[in-house]
Image 1 (spheres, rainbow, N blue to C red):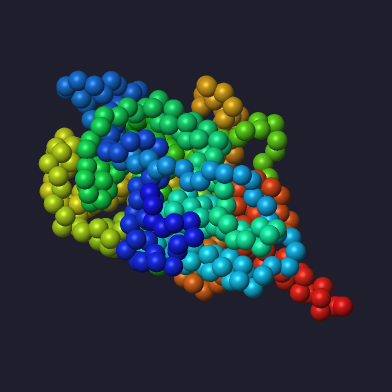
Image 2 (spheres, rainbow, N blue to C red):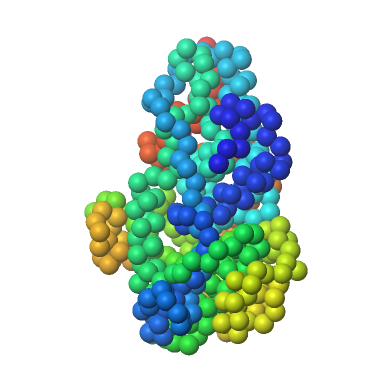
Length: 421
């Protein structure tokens, strides 16, 4: 994906930003080739063979887009001395354009995965999304030159390991067949059909459903949020339980407070979204408007074929949305949340549960965190980095040499020291 050159951000117009954003959004589903896939499961939740005729459609659909990784080259070398005015100006402009472009494309809706990254480090989130849109952050070398960050990994080994565990757990209950689509409206309709099948499956007595697309506008704060829940299941009391799956590269090291806080935020956001859906407060037309999709869009015949197999009436995207929202009314509110941890260092990792812990829903804390994060997206404050007690995160960040947050804090310290002289 080429939005602009590494140092040519000035010519990036709104349409290019939007297209890059839409490409990035589609890439979030899964790694792989273009098109979609229909999941099939048996009544007991085991995966069936999706090849051949007479497929029993019982689960989901995915749209998969793959993007190339950006950049190769030598390691970064940050200038430690006094920087030239021109270099500073170029560096600041680069950061401003990346930040405002990412903020602009997120003006309609936010992915829950982005919110999780924002809780971990907001500055890192900006650089990650920007890089996936083709906007590479820059750094100032010892010689005073402004150069792009090299060797950016859009998908890190840890992310690949986590994706693999999620995929294998998904395939324990689902299998997929390809469905070719050509429009964003058809792609989203397939996601809705996926969710419809999942909910029907759970209502009919399945032990669990996995990879469920959900969305709402939590607490009416003005932002539509979308995510994919790892697992929903009915517990022994016939109550709805939400399960989030996380992987760990070090199975013996205790979780940090930052990890617990980030995982808790994601689980609570998912619970709030599902509770909004089950209580019927989500407006389908508003959701489609936020996603820049037309509810009157007439779906492709290939999509309608799968809709008819589910006894879903109508032929427009709005019709599918209405049916999906109606299906959620058959589910109760989420009564409990669990985070499960699996190792990421071996082939059968997805079968070895290391530990699990329950998350207590704290509405006041959740509202406070969302208000803080949404404040950035509204343009009410500048981008923020990590707190001083969590600077250890920077040691694991590929953007540390270019980090605008660290440079700003360093400049503030230098200024204070000079004032004391």
